[in-house]
Length: 101
Image 1 (spheres, rainbow, N blue to C red):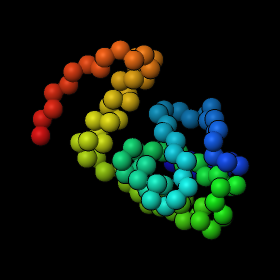
Image 2: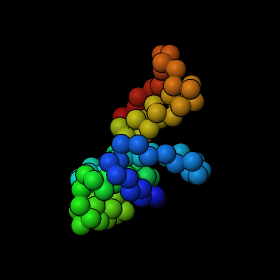
Image 3: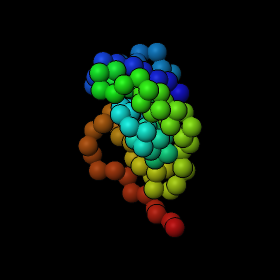
Image 4: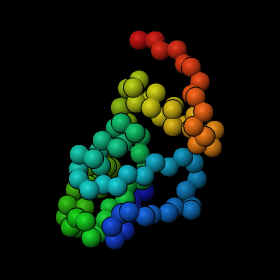
């Protein structure tokens, strides 16, 4: 898990991350926790000009305490992102996958 503090959280670059990284701009506690629960985010970016230090700390705590849900719909979403990355973000039709419930 990484926390980044930027002026406006609009542009943050990480060149030392090894492995997949999903960054979320955490401007409220719900979003900070949901990005982990639904999207398995591992980087939170907090804008110092957007929210104050106490609320930023609350967002960091929500982010740090959250856990990935593992729900199938969230796993499928991450799989789709992985497929896009492997294709170099080319927008060719996705491979068919069987859906079992």
